[in-house]
Image (cartoon, rainbow, N blue to C red; front, side, top):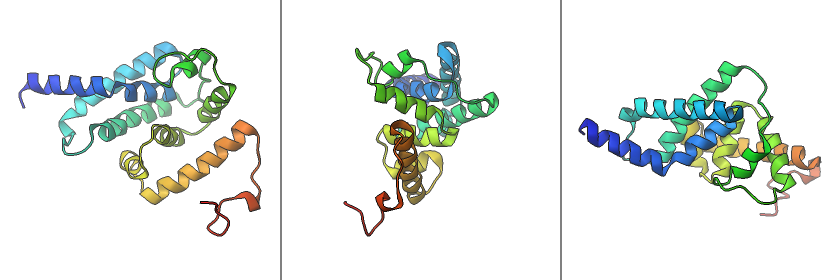
Length: 180
């Protein structure tokens, strides 16, 4: 592929999937300027790695893998507890348009997510983006069953953190008391 064609193909794919960059930057960076810098760092690394992209596979899966690796590296460099997400960011995470009346539960969920470790934040981001367990596994290099187990545990932890609810042994979902 000629350099010009390669650049145009990359730009088109990046434009189509640009929300991935913004979501990852929102999860791993502090403040607007830091998110902008991390977004640029992700885009640069995507361009540098574009030669390794296999067009027979979904671009979004490859893009998530690269973006999350950059985000995780950024988080390791910071070595600090995640900075609280500001309310304006929480309002726009759904797609860029602010919510007129933010739901307090959304803010509580964002605060609970920010308290997770970098890998768990990546896992919940991909889950909330409705990727299948197989796709999440491909992005994070985990088995599909490990993804399912970790998501179930994360959902329980987030539920407890958001609602203050405690889950007793009898409330846990097991094969013999499952409702589904």
